[in-house]
Length: 156
Image 1 (cartoon, rainbow, N blue to C red):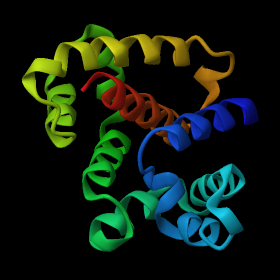
Image 2: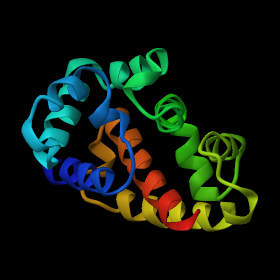
Image 3: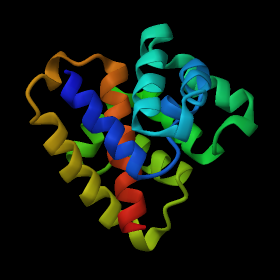
């Protein structure tokens, strides 16, 4: 489980703003660590999930826009709120929640097929990871977010 969380955080660190590591209580604590390194991201993520399953991280930034990048926070909150449907729709490669997520992230029509294909591939890899079925919904949503943002950066 620890390896999965570290892998997810590493992906998030390599991509864009991550509400689980840069927002909420964990983001505030993590920002106190010098150089804002990977350790600060891990501490922030673990704190947010431990404190309130990541709810503060995804919602406080929506209510306080200056804390995080709004588009990423909106996507994270949406993923957290609709994860079960997104998991099914991603496997199918289509669905209203998947389209809504692409809209939230402002993925243009020319890149949507590539983003969905990359997301399907990334999620298939994540779901094949030992221990995935035992992960909490919040951990799965955070992993989905990390895969999604990585793919959006690469494909869009």
